[in-house]
Length: 159
Picture (cartoon, rainbow, N blue to C red):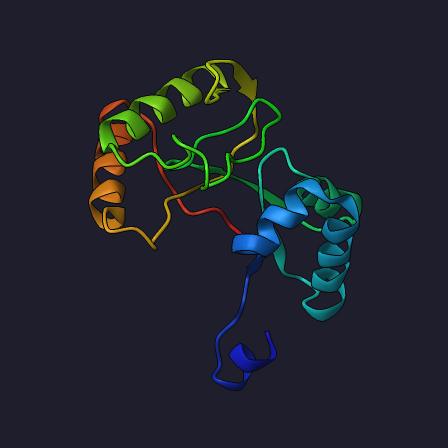
């Protein structure tokens, strides 16, 4: 937030990323520490947290405007956490599969898990990982499929 301010840019939300996000998803102590740090260091910023996680709960309990994020290109475990990338099936690389899964989710409110179970999740934001070779193609195809299904995409208002 401080560096952004030096160049005249306003930061509207904070998102824990990668291993830190995974850790905060399952560990309440880490999640609360992140939420409190956001509240203290970036007052007025929203928190973007993986839906159904400890970080999402911590953001809400700390009275931070918290947005729930779902993933187009990651598989979910039955407990609502993302499947470890070390496990087979953790990454979804087929845009058609990702799109069909998201359309089903938006129609039912239930996210399919790797085991075949379906779990309820809140959703304010969709993430597609930019660190894969298929990211741009995936984003275009998912956006198109959602639009064709009558699902309107719009930016969330963070602050």
